[in-house]
Image 1 (cartoon, rainbow, N blue to C red):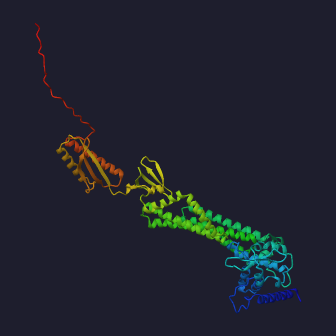
Image 2: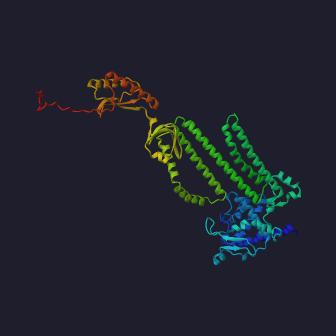
Image 3: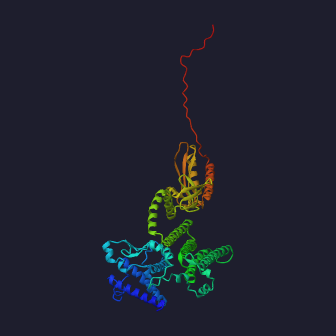
Length: 563
């Protein structure tokens, strides 16, 4: 009997023994035809161990027969590992290689008789939570919570040290009837016939092992990373040249670099998995790095696209809108940018194995503390939103705020900048500016012309009447003055003057033009007063003094003549 026949016979006996134990030890492991959807039995260390070994043997048998159904038993084997600490992005590749490594280790060790491995009854009787394979550090643990609660899986420590265990036992021969996990075929192979032909003609040292891979695979990995880096740099250089040229479509140049970042991981993962079929931790780390680069590219591309959509929206739908509304639209797209990029970042972190739920909870608590510390900043941000929504003033408006006047130059998310009449720029927080009484002088359709004319008290009734009639006629005939309302009235007696009240509206919203109109009106007022024969009043005081009446001299002594 040849060695191959003996190995096949031993394998059959092993499978028969495993099948008998599964049939007798577990009530849930009965005929698969009766319960085709029965899940794999992992209710005890014995069940998990037999399920794991049997699944990989069936996987390899179907794979050699080119049966596409080999993936299902291989999935059962991979799910026998506690890979909860492995990033989801590389979970499938890592669990596949780890499963084959553990199969190699177990097939080289002398396992205890299966009846000595705790079954479900022993687990319940002894209340087991962990079981260690005798004379090894390979452990199976009972999952305490989650979707897989109650299942027995190879522990996370065993999964992490599978490579170490394999290196320790790889010099040992297979136990009778065992075939191993065929890890060598996985690590030395390639799905490309051309690559395999090149590997066959390489020097022997080029096919030697270095770390988890062969030497030629390290060269291939280095070449791959170099080529992809050169590809990204080439796209960056091309985008910069295109953007600086006069060629049409220059706005598309900004998309070249993020597209290169997105495409590089796709090419890299394809070459790692299919062309070179690189195994081991270096390949897994490189896949993670590729994925990070890809997500950066996606976030960059989405940010550019949203910014472009925002610009087009303002250009085509809000071209006639006020500048403040245009700025609000841009801010809304910036906020959408932040939300989408944050979502992409969280998705990337989740795939890379970062506990996003805990991170979000931590950020929530930290965000509350930050919000309390940055209360003023948040208040200014909300004030900016109010200014954007209500639009009491916009950029370019001339307004009065508090006891100052000026032209609004910028309305930001934190502060408002106003250039005052003395040409200085006043920066005010949004929260404070929004609470002030704002008078938007640029929104006036006309400007009030309100003057008080003071005539001296010596003005006669006829002169006063002439001035009133002349002023009213002058204003009514001026096309720059609104017809209604228009009033010229004698309003009262002042301390040293007769008061005339002029109330009218200049048909302009431009302040310099209004000043010119008011100047002409006041000059004509002076002419009317001069023609009437009176004068404008000046601050005067009138003093009245009383004189006593002259009295005759009483008891006057006549002059005496000398004797």
